Image (tube, rainbow, N blue to C red; front, top):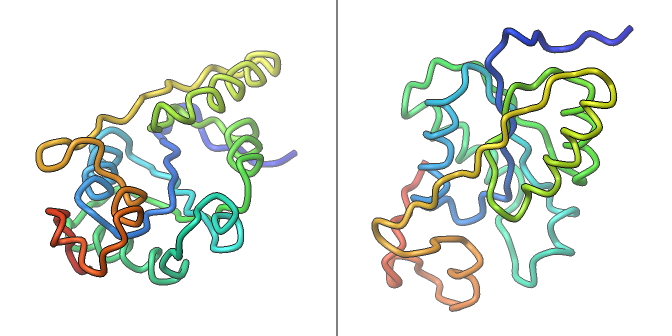
Amino acid sequence: MEKTISQTNDSAVIGGTFDVFHLGHQEYIKYSFQNASKIYIFLSKDDYIKHAKNYQIEPYQQREQKIRNFIQANSFSNEFTIFPLNSLDQIREFCIQNDISKTITSEDYVFLFNDINEKRKKLGKFEMNVIVKPRFEKIIPNLCSTIYHTLETSDPRSLGFPVLSF
């Protein structure tokens, strides 16, 4: 029998591409670390995301390192694991097989976690709490990497994007 994560563990699943590591991404990660003791981060692989984005994204290794550097710079003591994401089915299977207590996600993926919860119920598992992550709108409403890429500038700071190097 496969080992599962304990139900008593306060764990969360988050995910994204985290391209152009901006303040919105940083707030998302901070929020996740403030609301769970163990965080599973699913980071989109280059091959997976190239079909969804019509612009060039930073390579996976650079994006992963920026996340790790940010976590280290903030001295988060929570346990975390970064998984390369190859499909939404990967998240679905992980959440069904393991006793994850919550997900912190955007509105765009609530359908996925509602579906996961239905499958978990059929297996006699508890439902995950689905938390729709707050948008960080102090500087730019609906801040996201896609807006930055759509405007095609080489310097996101010229648009008011607070981008920090980690």
